Image (cartoon, rainbow, N blue to C red; front, side):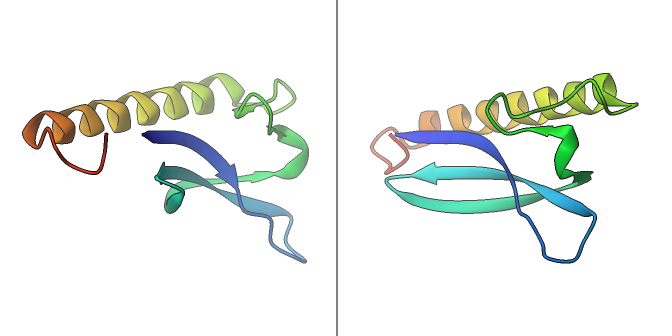
Amino acid sequence: MTTLSYYMKKRKNKAKHPIYLRITNHRDSRYIRLQLNLEEEHWNKKKQRVRKSHPRHEKINRYLSVKMLDSEALLLELKQMKPGSPLD
């Protein structure tokens, strides 16, 4: 089973941290970096969303939702192309 989630990679001595899309399939994870850097205080790790304290939280959360939907659609297409693939 393949799961999708967001992940903030914390970097030492940096104010902003990059956000990644994490794709996990059979305990093997791959990360795709999004063009998004945020301060740690603006990221809600549990909900995987930007907090309301960020001035552009609505726009960024819409961007994250669209990316998730696009990724899920792509996974579904791949599963349909190869029904016996390891993506199941």
